[in-house]
Image (cartoon, rainbow, N blue to C red; front, side, top):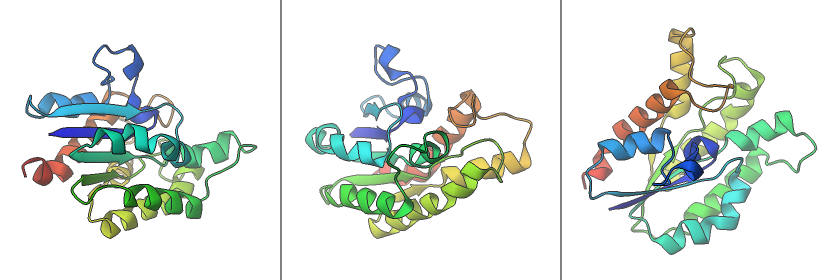
Length: 198
């Protein structure tokens, strides 16, 4: 089985300095518990939004013919609205339109896992997390529409922040510490277990 993880820096997690190109984040943690014959490819790229995925979708997904594709995108689509307001922004309708178009290009045989965007700041009530909610809802809707496995990473993170606010998950409100990566990996493994075994 060949699994591709495509996304942003949370997925990439320093993969460019890793000889195996897996990075040191949740993708590596998942790879380490999967059977040895499962090939894992990390296609995370720092700073990417869904608009960037569109430019490399054919090269990084379609041409590589994965058996299973995991998509984790949405944080930068919101974060850029906060830290780079002069950029052309990806509003929620554009996010949904492009995301749907990309998923519609996949062969029917490709198993699909969609991960909710995680968090922006370690406060459930932060502006970033409030702005993120409609993007999370889009991912949930697309998971139903495309019969994908949904990894409820946003819910898992918000639940953790509510119950254990003293245990930090990120280095800067977005990028993961080990604990954040562990939460992502565990959520993915729990959600995707059934299709990995098929």
